[in-house]
Length: 571
Image (cartoon, rainbow, N blue to C red; front, side, top):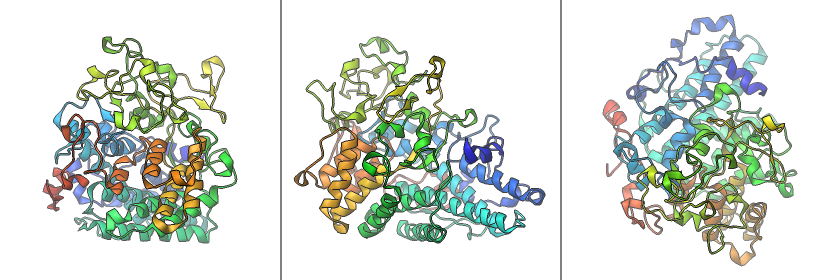
């Protein structure tokens, strides 16, 4: 699969650890020494070894929390909690109105779905570990290039190395985006941090400034190079500016100072680069589910098509890349098993609807989220195409959330708001048959080969509209951008009087549900702590307000105790 897999396969499935210890308790010691990865061998094949080390950086965003023989960088927890996208999903979606985790009965995970974290929570520890490990790998790669340890001996290799450095700075920025978003003040290290020391714990606003300046420098370098489009599976200028949009969109939360103008400027750059193809020449896919189907690699940056709505993708279509995280969790965790007569109830979960072979009966939606969509009186039919694959009352599912503490209630405890699938999706939304029937879709399997979308252009359009409504642009522009999203979903475009910050917030939720933005959005809207309740928020059936300190997760116990860092207030 294009250059990405050529580089990835040269690694032999994450064979490089670059000196990381295998205990999560060691993570306070980042960064590690890259010379531990037999740098004496680099001179024999500079390009080959540089590609292999970069492959390990990328694999850390795709693969499991551990390897089969237990020698990975994260071993002392459930490996599923340390897969990059799954770790973020646990903290961004499970505590909100969009999802719950029905089997979360143990104290180390179960309290998350009530939006009540604890300092020894395994899901929190897994997310923190994954983000810090990945940032460390990025730093080690950059330092290895800067120190000349790859023995690069041609201008071509030097240019290649500098492109890889830019990519590592983008990936590192993503780690710090989630770290400051979820944890606030955290230890910060970059390629200039002394090896072997304990990184300083910096204020959230200071890390924001450091990381956004680094990203702006990367974007400036790409501008000087003519903004080349990244190859498939890699990050480039589009991912860099998309991350800056996320930083600037939430700048008031992170720093106390709003940055709507800066946010909209980055949105305009992205929209301008992608306009001219796709739905109404917007750069969006013609069909919403082309972003979430088996052939979504065509619609990612560097993909085969003219439309590249997916600005940062994590590939999973090769057997060696399959994982219990990735899109597997986004499909199997939502589906029930067995497919007929769930737990003796009327609910029927047809695995074939999304072309999967397995289901875990773990995730359902809370009623408050379901009601954001337009429905008929029975909540079975909606004009919104984005609920196409859902399991609703039409399938015997109960919209209520009377008990989210056990999988025995799957089917009788909320709709299944699923969007990822393993179908080849055409422009008109039709689904190609599975390969054994002569089609293009894969045969059903337990692990999903569909790629995972980290950031889409649709998010940029909605962020642009929000920035415009906050004064950075005009209401007319905001309406135009929002209506592109609505019309693609099959909905009637809004009139000027129908668009405001509240209605835009609801449209953002309809478009981006389960895409790891919800908790951040609720905090930015001022609705996370109070002002809006959902089922089982703060352990109350119909929801209740949270203590103010829960705007931040606690820094895991093993980090605070191991390095003497300051815990967030209230824990």
